[in-house]
Image 1 (cartoon, rainbow, N blue to C red):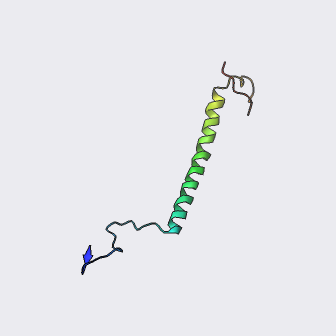
Image 2: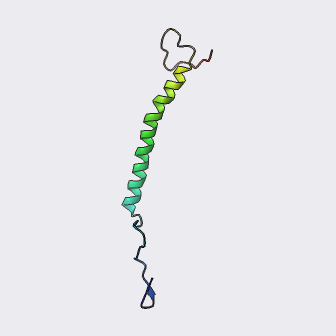
Image 3: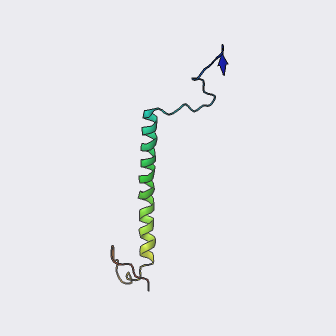
Length: 70
């Protein structure tokens, strides 16, 4: 938008303002927390599926042993 022959650079036509340094740091921090939360949810599910198909667990539970399909 031109005002009296010069372009005004601080006019934003969107609701989103440009990110500041603090905004970028907080965005990275929120993605790290989201990734950690995802790992905390998916890892036990992965171990549960892995142990469900482990043939060595016939009579007792073996944690962290070799995976054997029978």
